[in-house]
Image (tube, rainbow over all chains, first blue to last red):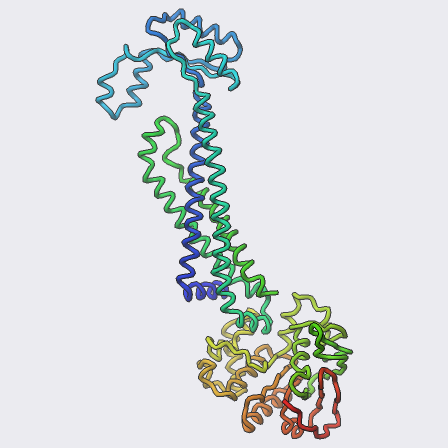
Length: 288
Length: 229
């Protein structure tokens, strides 16, 4: 309790240094929050695409049901197919209506005749996608084949890139935060050098001297995390309606409160770690 | 109580103490006399484990100071009250806060500590100044504050490093009288001083250091010659 009081007094007496430290921590944890949202979000998007039919064949209008059934049977006989689903023109129109229910103009323009019937196919292995896709393209009743392997692999590449860039930025910011906090706390320690010396001569243990500075580091980390996380979460909530339109059909948003609180909890652990490390090293040389 | 056996302390090429051997019994009052640079302050710093002897052994009660583990240093320092030559009072704290500091450091109960500090301040005669800052006090009052802080733990030993160094004759005698009163309660006192008038008048044991060597240990209480400061 005494350490908390001492620590709070130290913070109040140097408000500008405290603000600097908190500001750096906000930047660090705002970045960590934003990159966390992007990385977790893109993982869900990839999972969504991977779980969806990976090849969709759109049939020509003249394709007859028995020809389609034959094609389905032929595909199943290859042993590469895990699942197929036939979507008739009528069902396609229902899906279209559902997706565009808020836009009457688009609904008026489209009728059942315009939309093609399709076959959604999932393969056992992702490697089989190419051969299945080629087989479908060779069929005379198929007008177009959409092959989602490219989408998944492009998304994976982007996610990996974001992850690498994000991790690098976070490491750099974390190091900068540690150094700036070390500087701020180190400056305060050097101002209190005489006091520390006297306290040691008056039987203070190293931990008695260290604790107020460590609590100060933890305070900067915690406040920086809370503000950084709040800004990032508010930004995400604000952008949710726009992102939902963009990510139509992908069960990603709105973000679950459990996920957001999980990110906050992880960040607080990191923040406390950073605060403790920075203050520990700032005080260390005066305790030798 | 305190036993030094062939204690030497070297700093780089210089030597602060050479083969110093003497012992102090519980409840004794001794003067440590010698010119500046004779090793008095070094001896005090060795006794409080601010530094470690280059050779020789120091025992204080059950503690072997040379081998004392870092974690036991705070315990040692609680049993020794030090009146520093430069007082080492914190200028941004009141006298009460300065004297409370050792008890705060030891996590003592605050209300009990304040009560104890009031008694000590009464004993040293500066109770009315307890809410003042060091800058508001005279030299003698500051010295009393430093003594009060040394008494905070009710230590068995008090090391007083030139407690009358910057004081006029009357105030110096008041401080010595105070230390004598403390000694009468059974506290061992080692007082480093240049003041031959006080040393000769009190007729106590005198340990004389010169250039780091113990040159005399006058238990006979014979008057000593004035040392150069």
